[in-house]
Each structure stands twice: as C-alpha cells, then as structure tokens.
Length: 205
Image 1 (tube, helix red, strand yellow):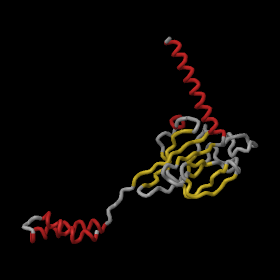
Image 2 (cartoon, one colour):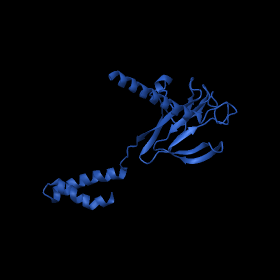
Image 3 (cartoon, rainbow, N blue to C red):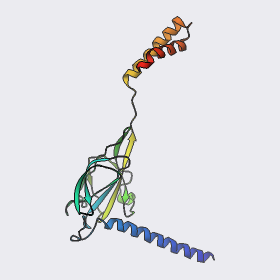
Image 4 (cartoon, helix red, strand yellow):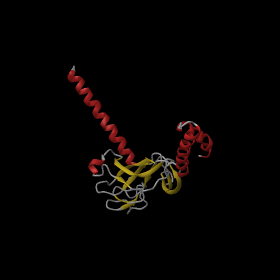
C-alpha cells in the first residue's frame, strides 16, 4: 500500500511540475517569436518585467498586443513590460535605462530588486541575487537570458516626517515660560505652569 501511495504521489508531483513549466513557457511566448512571427521580440532578445508595487510610472511606452504598436501612457500602475523597439535592442551585453517611479506620500522609491525570470529561474543562477538597482541608471542585460523575461520588483522606504521648526521652537518656549510661570504663580508647581502656557500658546502650534 505504501509503495502504491509513493508512486501515486510521484505521478502527481510530475504533472504539477509539467503544468508549472507549461504556464511559464506560455507567459514568455506572448513576447517571443521568429523574426517574421509578428511577435515584438525574437529569441535573441530579453524582455524586462517590472512589478511597480505602490508606485506609478509617470511616462511609459507601452506595447499594445492587440495593435502591435507602442503607445505613450502616463501614470502606469501595477506592472510594466519593457519590450524591445527594434531587432537590435535588449540583447545580452546591451544597456537599458531602468525606469523611475512616483511614490505615494510618506514613501520614497529606492530602486529595483531583481528576483529572477518569469520562467522560474532564480536570481541566484543569474548572479543577480540581492542586487537593488537605482532608478534611471543603465542596466546591462546579462548573458544567458535570450528569449527570457527578467523580473524586477520596486522597493520603497518610508520617509521620516520631520517636525516643523516652528513647532519645535514653540514647544521649547512653552516649557521654559511654563516652568517660570509655575514658580511665580503656582507655588513652584512647574507642571501647572506648563499646562497654563499650553492653553495660552498651544493654539498657535
């Protein structure tokens, strides 16, 4: 019985692996084909995929699969595929400029993390693991990515909100004059003096 279950589980795992590779292959085939196939890229080229996360691409040239043409779009969100515009672009050893993103309030866009290919090859095998690339910089397409989609994920960091200078100054003044007021009018109770000054000057902050 155990042997039968083992064989059954092995068959299930084999079919699962085949279905995953088939899905990954179909993802890549939407972009790649022979020179006269009508596809936007040939098998000597590489397509770049960008997961934009919470950011927005202010301006982009987006490939329309229905019309087979590039269209200028603004405020692109979600994801973006960078497609070669000619048969000589985006080959191994050539450079592309990584896009810059607009970040929402309270965050800044720090760069692109490369995590692998759409077909499932990990970044470790590409010697790109742990690398975050700055926006608007030149990225050299590595060897061995012909006919592949190389994937990047946007990285963001929260921006520390600085307290306005006026608020800091007023806070210091309230404590200083409140302490003096507490000594003079509240029998040395500085806390009551500070509370009184907060009522007088707090509305100005």
